[in-house]
Image (tube, rainbow, N blue to C red; front, top):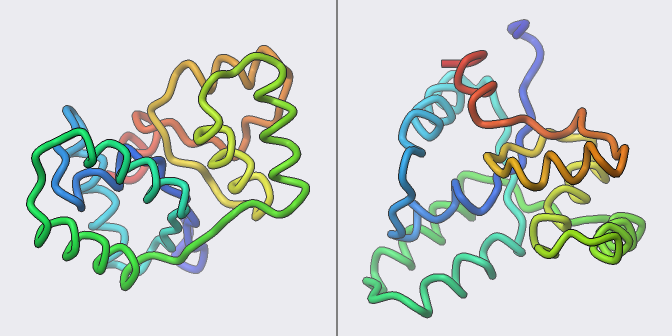
Length: 152
């Protein structure tokens, strides 16, 4: 990465969950890499309100600490930039859903990254496989393993 080039990443919900107190197995190295880049100002991090909604659905099923959730949500709002799909992106997500991918939230996150020309950091192999099979633009998808290998 050139020093003048700032990496722009939209986080999958997987990377939002730990901030609100939900443990996610195997995500530590990715989060360490993300925070290292953030401290060096080498990354601009985006989140979607869809990820917040998805995290809340998960939390609603668990025993959670309200103070951790509130602190985590505040941290996300302070440290990250919100991003959502354009109207064209919403339609793209709906079209891909109609083609057979079940998780509309993942499609909305993908469409957000595509809409704004930012990278979508994920570990979702099913999504990447589906997008590849549908001959969609996967250049905006940055798989977790590649991110860690490239930037750790």
